[in-house]
Length: 184
Image (cartoon, rainbow, N blue to C red; front, side, top):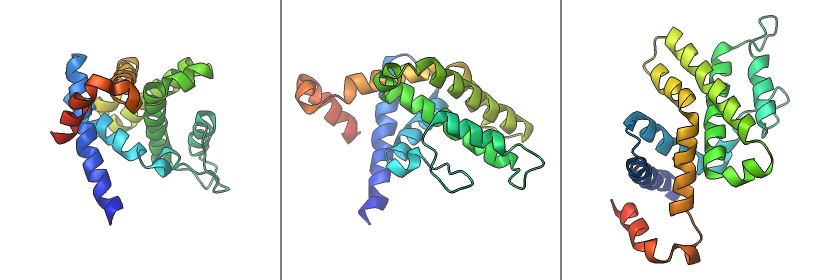
């Protein structure tokens, strides 16, 4: 039962924190702030980081494997042909790369993957935007914005992590500010 309550509390926490960080960075895109807070809430559940599985039902953990799986769904001669699955995989790649380049930037940079992750995130969000535009979905503009300003939103997540997600002993005098965010 508590698992059902935690995401709602986390969602509120991430909404407030994301809004606060976007305001500090003078980012005025409310739709993106809502999307990013939902992404953070979703990825707080570890199993949501790797929901994509291949034909052998193996969990895909690497961007290159996710890209390969997305590409395999577009083969019209294959029984697994499914452009909707490809769209969902591409959205996940965009979300995953945004999350990793923002929250885990040091890890991605240390592995010399920052440019790769950024490029794949932008390409994936652009692909989702084009798909949604053809389907006449309102979200098309959101994904276009995420693609075009990927680095900006990645930086906002990195900023959020550096300012608000430090180890407890490093937070020091900022603890009151963080606690007030969770009380909003």
